[in-house]
Image 1 (spheres, rainbow, N blue to C red):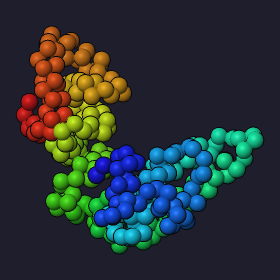
Image 2 (image 1 turned 180 degrees about the vertical axis):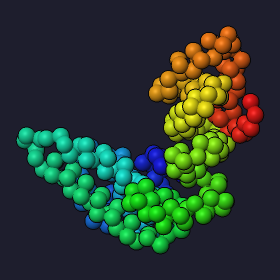
Image 3 (image 1 turned 120 degrees about the vertical axis):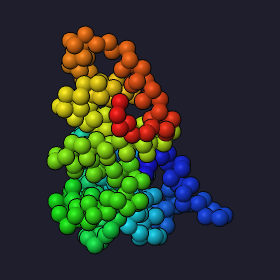
Image 4 (image 1 turned 90 degrees about the vertical axis):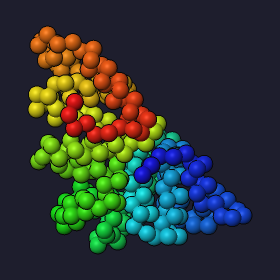
Length: 266
């Protein structure tokens, strides 16, 4: 589920057969979707995406549309809450509008949670659990693990891995491998996939595995994985890193090309 696309694409999703609905037209047609957000230039992209998503949810209030709006409101709120702390000596109204945007976010997020208490949407179930500690929602999601809608969604697989990371390393690895298998050509998996795989394998003293995914992380541009201790563990045994570098390169390429297959033994 792609979260971040261009504003142009988001607006075009609102296009009818004859007339494309622009952002300004949405604000004209449903001014309440725009007026209760910040009115300055901060968080412009997040604000526009929220407005478009509000319109989608208004026209078709499905759980999927509510889920997309929920995620976008969380992103917007992170941005506008930070911006609200910036004081304007001469233009206090700018700070006030950002506070209004923050309050709107809290209100709308709360509304969505209330309206989806009985949902079976995997993403909403995870949000009910992770944000509100709703154990019943978690149990519903765990009972859906073998369903195609869950197994074929990399976002939900990563959510499940986040849960299992505290209780079952092997299950977590399987889920993270599945995330990589579902990665489409040209996309980058979330950095925590590589960080978690590296951490688990290092803890399990599977240094070859840990090094491979730490190296893949580096190749992907992620800098938060510390590869030096793993290198030391391998080289201290007199082993060369060259074969692992080759393996990491092949693994990285397969992920980037969308052809990664979970390695059972390597």
